[in-house]
Length: 118
Length: 222
Image 1 (cartoon, one colour):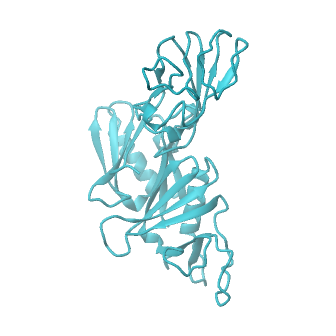
Image 2 (tube, rainbow over the protein chains, first blue to last red):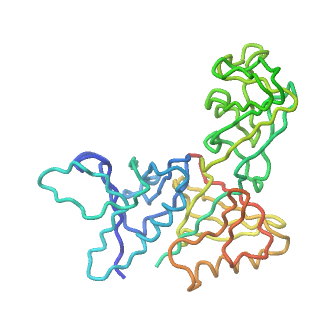
Image 3 (cartoon, rainbow over the protein chains, first blue to last red):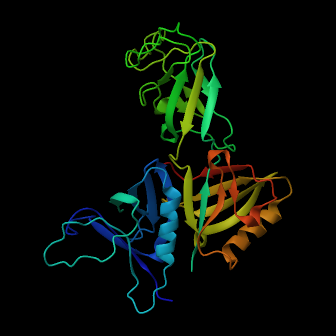
């Protein structure tokens, strides 16, 4: 089965460091709550360095389980005849003119994203 | 298709404490042996006055004028992160603290005052791992089985999830986790243990094993 690729994008222009990131599903290590409105997703570091990459998401208060469930559903999605590009959350609303919009916006309970890579 | 294992710690929805004058701290119980160490788990704290005599409350609050008056404490202020440790919550004094009091947000408790703490999702209260991150399952004590996962932060250690259960149930716990992961009845996320709001939701494979505690120990704090 083809692997899903999980896409996150901040509310920026996808043209600066850590505006957006994509991981293969197999790189996902887990998620943990860090506050009432934050949930952090961890992925294997893309450069093999000590310390993993993470995407901290601001979410609807207390919706951790809902977001985890939707993430699992998206990550497991098996769509034939597609490129397996899976939007977990795309907050872009000001894309450069030469960049087409992505059709899906992802999990509705996520309202902000911070990407940290090592 | 990956199975994702979801856990949430044992936590009551609310906790009430009847105060004694001169004692500003109390211990939250019913936590399934995993302490509260972060103020992020506390949504709100209120004090219901026994009578109308207490004038030793901070300037941020409405003066108490009637028995049963409810005051919502300021957070942080009356309670900050250093005031929550090993499940002990300490409310700042308004006066009489020898210089450590908070004259704006403190509240001197009196005997019979009712303190109500409302809990919420906070630091490390819930977490999810893909089944492929499970490294092993170990009997770590009588009545305790520990799941070891690849660490989220990758600092050369592992994350562990200890499950407390009836004695001599290790094999059943292991068998249940195996069934959760490899059974055909689940797709996507599976709630393995959810002890929130004083309720207990278990994967059906763990029913009847006396699960009554969950201790999460990621390899480093967040």
